[in-house]
Length: 259
Image (cartoon, rainbow, N blue to C red; front, side, top):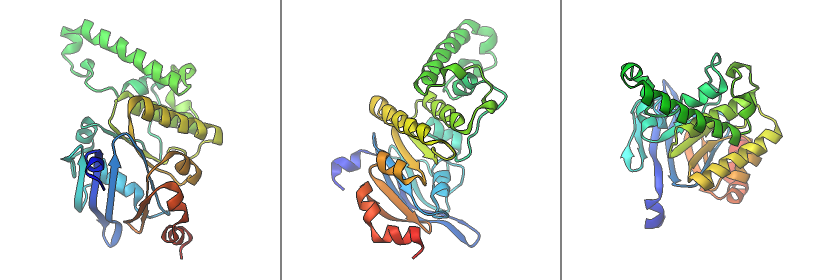
């Protein structure tokens, strides 16, 4: 890797390991994500992809290895600290507050909300109200971008799986992260919505300079969207390459076919 490429690395995972008893869920994972790129992470079931995400984002504490974000080590930090350092993630199972509206769910992700400090609601009520109006406008624009503006006042629990994924995607954008980790963003949604998801990710990547690291079993989705792609198998990173290189690699084919 050239010096210029190294300077562009925003997320660096080195020799990451996480074992659960005798199970080596992650056993030497290495990833490098360049700023402004859409990077993929694929592998057969049980390869360790989601556990890697959980270690990167603080939901698991790695047994060993290093995770760096913008050159700063974040290994072992709690999720809220990693979030405030500019890294967000979505989950395989969508997580909304189902008794709150779609708009309220998106607004929740905004950082540094004055209303979260109790005394501000008494002493700085005008400032709190003004910020809330600004955040509401911003959240509505995001809902328009993912074509959910007509659902803004609907309870999140009543949405379809695909719509919930779009709410989660919009909520992630509300936080204005530098790096977004998407875990199976197409799971359970129809082909039309998958195409829309591709467009939304590309749009935010191009217009906002958002960096993505994506896990998905949908190979068409990944090949269309991601470059480069990392491949994991049995807890290890076995390959990094362009989509066409990955699809033709014998080691990758063996991993998927169980050879």
